[in-house]
Length: 517
Image 1 (spheres, helix red, strand yellow):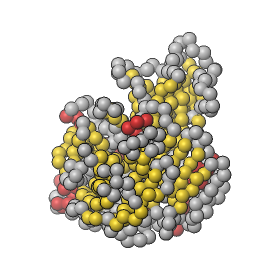
Image 2 (spheres, rainbow, N blue to C red):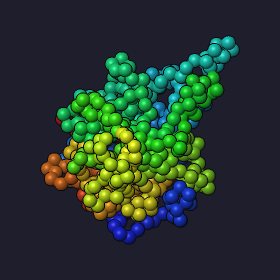
Image 3 (cartoon, helix red, strand yellow):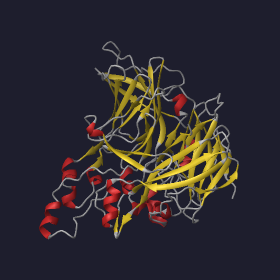
Image 4 (cartoon, rainbow, N blue to C red):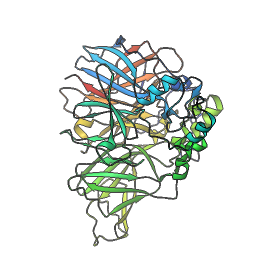
């Protein structure tokens, strides 16, 4: 079946689907019915440690030389014990090696301590975000009883992303552990504990890197951060932790996810830290309660900091990604989807020169053609309202997540394009390109196919921002062993080629392109 490419400008164009959109529901989004089951996308698969050939359809540009590396859960049970949450699955690393227009594929499970302990006993021995490891039945009653009072230790199941530090490849998650891996063989090399080097209890899986290789990350928080040329922005979200529930999680037989909750009565607050001095600005920027998983970009211009993010008006989505929800079908699946808030791209404009003399009650955002507002309401307090970075047509595609840009050239700089997945399902079901000039969207969509996070690779002779290709791994729940690597022309959004892989791959999280040296 040929792919469908849609360009949406003033008119709304809906891709052909059995799931028909209706009026906006109470979540301010379109309700869908007849969603197809995606249960096969969250099933355990076997690893493919040796490279296998793929069948290329179309043309893959010969200038692409390197590997698309991806990370995500690939095993959801040990013995008769099953994980509860999507984030709990054991990390599986994937490599699509591209050279001379050809592609090979391989995959390996990360040999974390969690994976090895679980495998040795064929049961869940290490607790994860949504799953608690139950007492070992081989112990006597007294020892099993005492083990329920032990604190849950941080997992080293680094299943979220691939990151680079000083040229080395690491896989990471939202705890204090990450692993260095060989990007060629995907073999696990050594474990790194952040606490041995810096005073943090955990670190995010999404660091930011400057052109000179300087990397910024943050620890000891479930929040997120963004970065501009001179500032790191810490995003304080009203996602709270019930310490009593977390401390007693093992005793109650519950995962630590039970202790994380959304408090919509609290503001979201942006804290600015000067990258050069380390000083935190006394001015705090407040907005209504928002949930943010991923930022698009942040840059400074004319005395303002533009902060672009994918935002949701509700922070309970993380608890909806239970494996039992992802494996539902029929009306039960529709209900899960239609009660979830989707994420949409938004921009906040933060004035950088707020002083005691700055007047209150005046919109401090003087940028032309910007509808975002920033009002000083008290000493060191500015209340902000976002502007949408999309048109009405984006509602047809379920919003946008997994945002990407031409990171190497336009991170922390003014930019025009960003890319992401549309979410007319619980996972991405389309690839989107947003042009900020006119807020137009281009769409790649094919019924029954579910593309992963788009990764932008610039062409070697790139002149314009979108000169390059988009790489995305596409999976389907309806056909066995029908995964393929999709290559799109980033400028025209037309398919150039695809490399079909004769294996099953679960829907994953994040990845990166590792160019051949």
